[in-house]
Length: 331
Image (cartoon, rainbow, N blue to C red; front, side, top):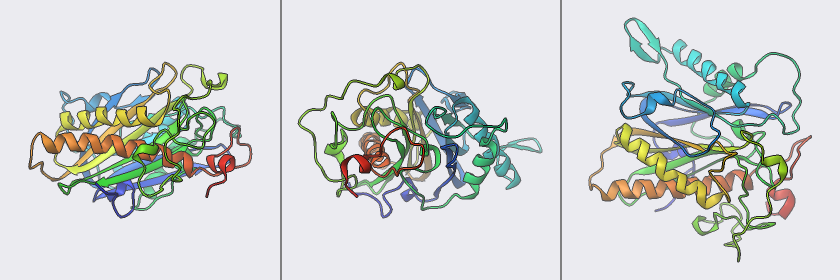
């Protein structure tokens, strides 16, 4: 398995990612969409999630396709980013047909970034506009690190961010991950600089330091130990032909990637969640082997994407935590 040409989730043909942010507030939105609806799934393992329309993704529900997934900052306020994306999709003539009406299907998840040093004044909710702007910016190339939903993200001792990675399987299927890292836990061992994800690194994509001698994290700071103030939210995607149950299984497998990259993960204070998307372009020729490899690749991509998010974060005025590069001097 090797990364795709961009090493981004958009190596899955047809997918696009758009981002918008407010650097003054230190928050933003990331949207995954495509030219046509796709099959979706979801799995939640954190104890403090914030979501919209995730029930519709259950295999037994009647809605079969998704128009976009949204990752947003802003805690519960950020769920309104989905409304901005849905409005833009409706204007484009996209959505689930209910008689003459079209209802865009836009599941979303949020992370808590309200206490990260950003300036927050005024009563207007910025997230519908940020969602609309992120959808309008959707493209094959997009920024990593301090961008989109990762703009104001933090981890235990370092600034978080938005990350992505991809793999092309021997079967020809493509798998990718997109993640906003705002975890209670740490992505580096001890005081760093070694990433927990190091055994899965490809081509020095997050510094090439290799594994640490010990994976034990530092004691977690009290600021990250309040319920509902942290999470890792992400998306895995493939061009394989999967149904909703298959997408759900892919999302479950991807949580292994979070556990490999963030220590500890899936805590009582996190809202860890993974969406899954399948465009259906390539059937699985060898069941169950192809399905097993898809899940394995999804976990690896998630692990690498998490490390890339933190590795590529950049400093901004008012930050409460340093970036990895500030701390360890590797560009």
